[in-house]
Length: 129
Image 1 (cartoon, rainbow, N blue to C red):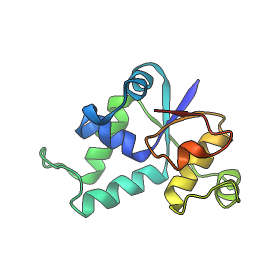
Image 2: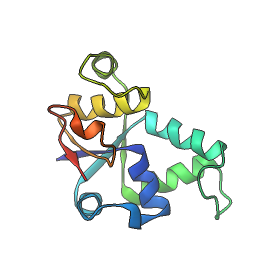
Image 3: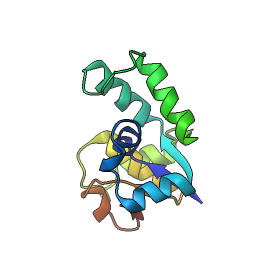
């Protein structure tokens, strides 16, 4: 079964695995993982703002690629259905990226690994944390 990773889950895995819950860590080890393509942009933005540890001295692209390869994550595009759903009244979350990530999970009928409490309250969205 496909499982979507929220952006912060990818970062926790890369930089501080202790921040992952037991269930999240288990899902990362056993599930078929994917992420929304908006997560790549979010990581690059955080990287450019210096909010991500760059101990290895690599570029943002190399950092992102290492995460994708390390977790064997498939990147899913934002489709018209995802874009439309992300704008629906289903979402109380104001962050457009989080809305797109949650909508990606719903459209793909996939679980979402997230620590985000607002996302975990969305009806029909199965979250792992």
